[in-house]
Amino acid sequence: QVQLAESGGGLVQAGGSLRLSCAASGRTFSIYRMGWFRQAPGKEREFVAAIRRSGDSTYYAESVKGRFTISRDNAKNTVYLQMNSLKPEDTAVYHCVAGEGGFVPTRTQEYDYWGQGTQVTVSS
Image (cartoon, rainbow, N blue to C red; front, side):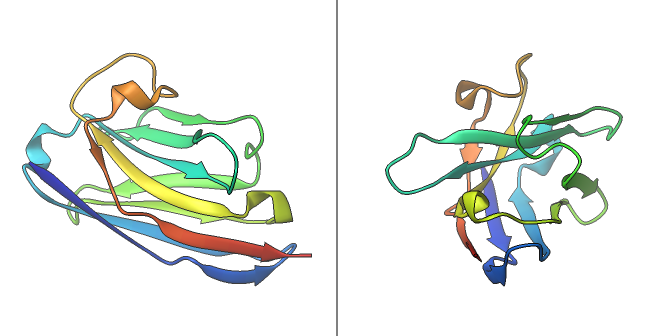
């Protein structure tokens, strides 16, 4: 089993920045890919970004490209999401995810473990 603990959410004005962190514990050697999904009230959960364990491949939703950056520190078993130029439509609960395999990083089914989530609220 893998446990994921997110931190770094909060309230920020539009145009501001936040950095989310996700620390993994447990069977971390089995993790192939980590990433982030988000869910706003009344909306479906959507893919945000993902990164492979090697760090050589990253994936982003079109809505966050150029504003968000995902990175990871394997020594700390931690993945980060740097969010810049935040918009009110970025308001959501952000969930950290980890998967042991898979080929399509944007699919929820590719991930075996999910964190509880951290709230990000962007005011206009």
